Amino acid sequence: MITLNNIAFKYRDDEVYALDHISIRFNSGEWTSIIGHNGSGKSTLVKIIMGIIEEYEGDIYVDGELLNIESKQTLRRKFAIVFQNPDNQFVGATVEDDVAFGLENLGLDRAEMVKRTEHALGLVNMLDFRKHEPHRLSGGQKQRVAIAGALAMKPEVLILDEATSMLDPSGRKEVLSILSELHERLDTTILFITHDLTEIAESDKVIVMNNGQIVAEGSLEEVYKDKNLLLESNLKVPYTMEISDALLDGSYMTHEELVRRL
Ligand SMILES: Nc1ncnc2c1ncn2[C@@H]1O[C@H](COP(=O)(O)OP(=O)(O)O)[C@@H](O)[C@H]1O
Ligand SMILES: [Mg+2]
Image (cartoon, rainbow, N blue to C red; front, side, top):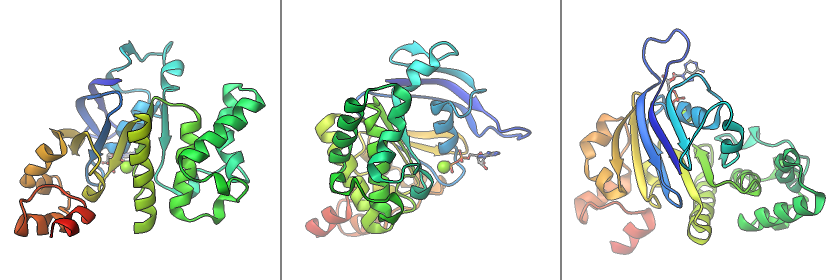
């Protein structure tokens, strides 16, 4: 779906690369998690994919087509993004206005806009809140509305850049369970960026970043086996994993799974 070939980028005057010649493939229908500590280059990568940073080295292909000045507008329509801060992404006075806002640029007729808005809010279980004011919602609900806004654009890839990191535990759970449902029911291609290893249980593929480089790539189990690499990459091994290591087989499991197996 998206192929990155040798992508490199330095912020102005910096000596080191924020992204140091990385190559990745994101496959259609897969949930790919990119994990890395603060400053490892995750958001820079997202900015390049989304076109917020344009002067990078290397090539990006989307569905086999080179992303360049002529193709970029059409190709980037296939991506939609949800950012970290739930309070920075609202423009509409009501939940439904907010979801519809992004659609206005697509030149759709009103009936289609209403249909898409309702469908997207239904997918994130927020239809009952459509007349509510966004700022009164909980953090988890706000991010679900932001996901609906992204889904209404009918993207081929949904990108989430630390979209759960400002939420409380119940908000995180809400957002992760909605994403997991979308991934299962609709086969949505998900690019999930996080520094939190407890959030990657659903991944088909995990990419570990450190100092602007990819230091590991593979299935959850493969990446998870190399605890030293995770520690060297400044990633915190979740407490559930320490217990799994000490008392069970040390495999990756969610909190719920750990409780069940204990
Ligand atoms: N706007 C910016 N100007 C200069 N340096 C930046 C800017 N944004 C990020 N950086 C630097 O680039 C590196 C990667 O940052 P970033 O991509 O935001 O990492 P992450 O999202 O993994 O926390 C860090 O060293 C960071 O300090
Ligand atoms: Mg970031």
